Image 1: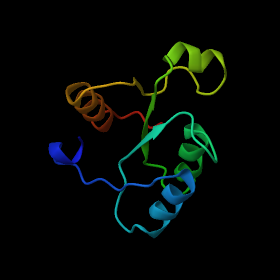
Image 2: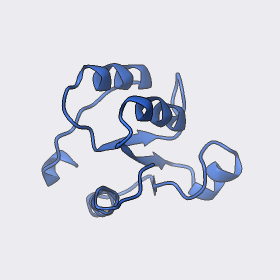
Image 3: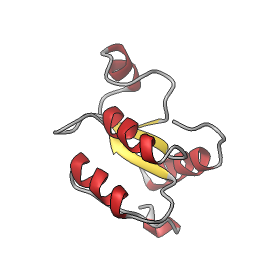
Image 4: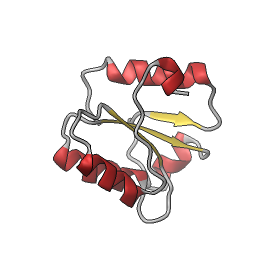
Length: 106
């Protein structure tokens, strides 16, 4: 979806592979799009680990659970960038565009 909208996308099947991909990538990474609940670590943990070496990184979390359920269970802080699955190309593109053009870093 993102590549069709002109974005360069780095993919990783697991959080550990995402950390390795980011470590080995010399370019700028503007946005992390990650699921909230994953094996190995949560999306929040992944975001925090990546942020230490890439403080400009913005994050968009996604989940099949609602933002309220996730925030109420302490898995994700309230007020973060979040998109609920399933989503379509337009809603993802709108969210990504909005986040990338915001001064807020999460």
